[in-house]
Length: 453
Image 1 (tube, rainbow, N blue to C red):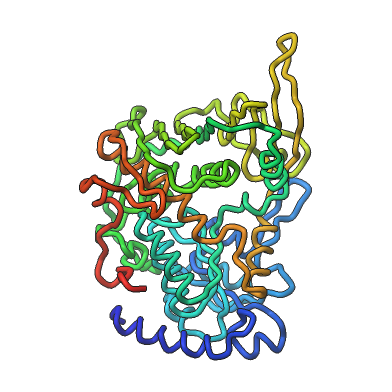
Image 2 (cartoon, rainbow, N blue to C red):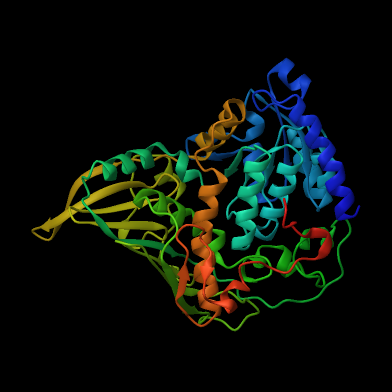
């Protein structure tokens, strides 16, 4: 089906959905049994976890399929065996074609867990088709895509929840309250860390496309290239066509949380320096990066290293108990330097602590907030927003603004560390034609997001 035919078909679905829209539930039978009909698009590790749930030490992280008010209609994936396997577990239908999901008026919402380069296109198409959307982070592959996602959500009055679940964590609300009450004083320095052992030293080898995989559809908006299992299985993160490295794919969690806590939107300027120093593989994105964002009264930095095996991600035990991370070597920590104290906070249930000046060379902890992994509350918030039509905790505009910070950093890095001037109202890069070229990617025609969504 050509793009114009797809738009025509989804426009019909939009009209049908809006005529019966009252509280966000599109289909008559859904209103009758009071359930939200959803579909999963992208059945990989994160997608299957979102739908089916998973076990943590002493706890069950409930998936969408396990909510009493949810009915799963479809799973959709370009890998047939994977999609069918998840469909069987969810008692749903499998389809390889996203249009089947979007053209079905019974579907109220979609959960998109596709690779980074597909997030924006899938979300825009879903909004055009009258569906609410839960989209995994990062919001977009480029700044322009993020703008289009926000436009589509507003134009079609859709709920679009960004997968930065820290915004649904109770301990982060208490940290935000602590800051807003002035207990930390004025914050003039925020440091965000993304320091892991994520080294993928790989070489791309062209191979025959396996049966049951629609490789062209997986590539989607990216330029055509031969199939490679090396790209398909995770290493796409390190290639510009599909992502911008770990600062985009994972670091955006900490960036979004930090930006929310300090109450900032678009910066005045941004620059980043770094490199890929530890291997000579086909990876393109940096393994070492420092990004700096200047606000009127705040310096906001992100420090990334991907060869640091001695740094430790906050593990599941910490996430589900009253433990706090060992901050000295916490791979995903945030540090907020206020005039009255230093707050260290961890994502995904890591909790937070506020430190005063040491006494007798021992830490002085002024206050502690214990965390819990917020995956389930974030899903609950999405479902509640579908019913109430109130903006969700991680509305797509918030996700776009946080993801834009990453785009500024990678654009600056690719231009050799040039400082970028940012329009604080629009978030657009100003007075730099070379930088503006990276704000929007080139698309294969059938996978292009239209200028007018």
